[in-house]
Amino acid sequence: MIRGFTLIELMVAVSIFAIVMMVGVGALLTMVEANKRAQGINQVSNNLNAAVEQMSRSIRVGSTYYCGDTAVPPSPLVLTQPRDCPNNGGLLFAFEATGGDPDDIGDQVVFRLNGTQLERSLESGANGTWVALTAPEVQISNFRFYVTGSTPLAGGDTEQPRVLMIIRGVAELQGVQTDFTVQSSVTQRLIDI
Image (cartoon, rainbow, N blue to C red):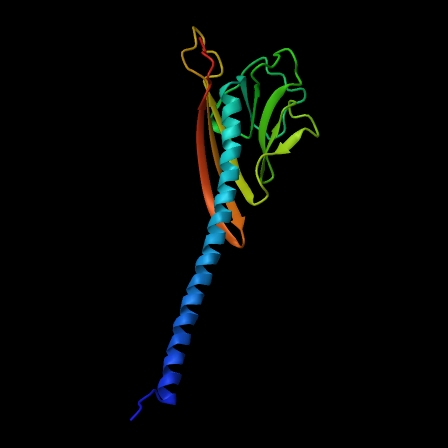
């Protein structure tokens, strides 16, 4: 007598196999989508980190730190006197770049938050010289500079100039929003004696 599988046994086996495959493919598609989102958020994070790193490097070797109360630089931006803003923080930060001419009022580096984008000007904040440092997917809601030690103290200055940057915002990519807070502290590399 030859024994085999009945039609019902084959249908049950194929149905179980189909259900297992549907669950497996669904999980695989979910993992692929999660991976895409994670890569996107990683790209946005890398963009923000690159902007903060670029700012930190240029601030570290700059001089004559100026912290402004508004995001619009004064015209002309003359950096003969440094200006701290240790309490409430500033919305604009300007300084004389390394190798810059302190007598040239048009060569200062300026950083600010304009709307939701972080911007830099290499020409004292003149109109048309602002360049966005962050991608459009990075929406910065709050950006403050806290500057201490740039203003000489009476009787001698023993504090090295420092800049604390605090950035808060949202990164949105493919419908996923991620809140972030970034804090970076920079100490001037030049010896402040």
